[in-house]
Image 1: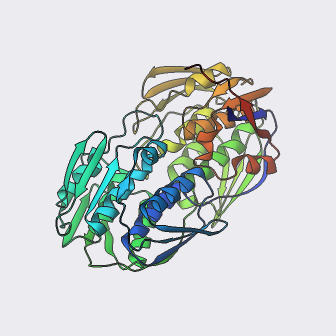
Image 2: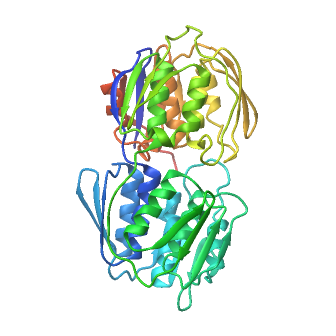
Image 3: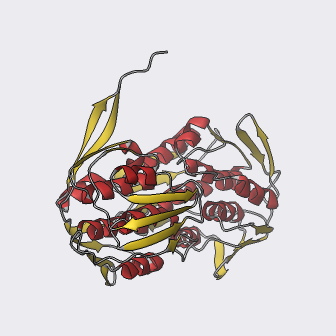
Length: 433
C-alpha cells in the first residue's frame, strides 16, 4: 500500500511569478448549478484539483454528461437525470457534494443525499441547508444517514432566515429558489466573492437573482433556465497562500491574475505584520524580509465572514506569525478545532500555545526546523508546506492527498519559485485484520 508524501528542503527564499488558478470554492458550486438546466454549460479557468474531479464523477453517476474538454475547461449537460441519489461515498470524500440538494430538488422535485464528510475541522452542520429547503416548501426526512427530500409540485418562494452567516447554505438556498414559484428573500446572505460569482452565472442562465443589500439576496423564481458560458474568478485562498510563501521565506513573488480586491482584510494583516505588498490591477507583488531579521511585528487576528479575514487563510497567517517579534493571538471564529495543526508547528520549534479549540497564542520569532509532519486537512496541509519551506533542514509531510483536493499543481508552482520540494510515494505497511 502506498501513500503520497511531500519531501521539502527548507531555507530557500522563493522568487518568481505565480499564475493564480481558478477558485475551488466557486468551481464546485458552478458545476452543481449546471444541473438546473438541460442545456450545456461551459466553464473556463476551472482548477485541475481532486475536488473538481470528485464532483465531476458524482455528477456522472447521476447521469449528467460531464466533459473535460481541455485543460481547465469543463462542459456540463444535465439532460434526463433519473438517478437522483448522492451516495455516502461521494459525500464522505467531499462535503461540497451537499450543494446538489438545492438544484436537484428545484429541477427534479426529489433527491436522496448523504450526510456529508469533508475536512475534519469541527462541526459543520448541514441543518441550515435543510431548513432553507423546508422554508421553500420541501419535505425532508432523515433516515439511516441519508436525507430524503421531495418538493410536491414545485418549490415555493419564501423567506430564508439563517441564524448565522453560512456560505454554502446561502448558495444552496439560491440554487433552490431560482426555479421556485414566487419570490424568495435570503438573509443574512454570505458576501463572499464566490457567492457573487455564482450569482453572475445564474443571471447568465436567465435567473432573476440580485443582491439587494450587502447581506440580502432576493430571487424571483422562473420556470426554466438556459445553458451559459462562464470563466471562474481567481482563487483568493491560493493567492494568499503564495503571498505568505514569499513573506515567510524572505523572498519576492509576483502573483498574476490575483484578486486583490477580494483580499482586503488579509492584505491588511500582512501590512500590519510588516510585509511589503503592492497591488496592481490584477497582480499582487509580495516582498518578504530576510529570515531572523526581526522585521515582522506580532499581530492579533480573528477570522470572520467576508469581508473579514477568511478562515481558510488563518493557518497560513499563523505560520507567518511564528516569525513575528512579540506575542500574537489568533481567534478562529468560524470553525471549532481548526487550530489542531498548531501541534505540528510546535514540533518544528514554533512556540504556540493552544488556549482552547478556537484560540491560540504565538511567541516569536522562532527558527523553524525540519520535522516529520502529518496533514489533517486541506488548508492546514498547505500551511505545513509553508512552514517546511521556511524551516532549516528536511521535512516530510504525510497526507499530501488533502492538499491536492484544493491546490492545482502546488508542487510545480513552488518548484518554479525555486523551492526544493518533491512528491513521492511511500510504502505503508498493511494493517492486520
